[in-house]
Length: 115
Image (tube, rainbow, N blue to C red):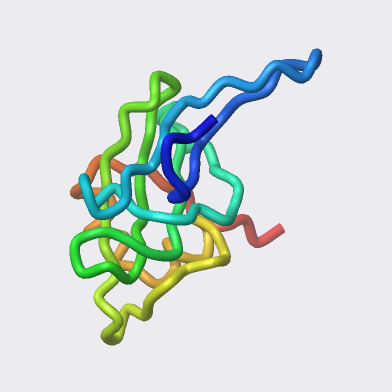
């Protein structure tokens, strides 16, 4: 069970055993609050997701995380031209952010298929 109401990333076995991988700490660590969308796994093996609030100015984040729960915020929304409070998940959030900035943070991306 989470120690706060800011959200968790968890895994569940086929038998229904739930294990928290990351518990969001919100304002205490600026790691974000309230992740609503599923994570996506990058070609580098890391997982990417968004939170609808939190981060440095408080308007949501894009983060990367490994399976041990080590989370790095790679972008904090500013409520400016980049928007705020992403609910759509990583794929849509990535389209709103400079891919060069994400690559500089270590993200790897593929271009969408045109097939």
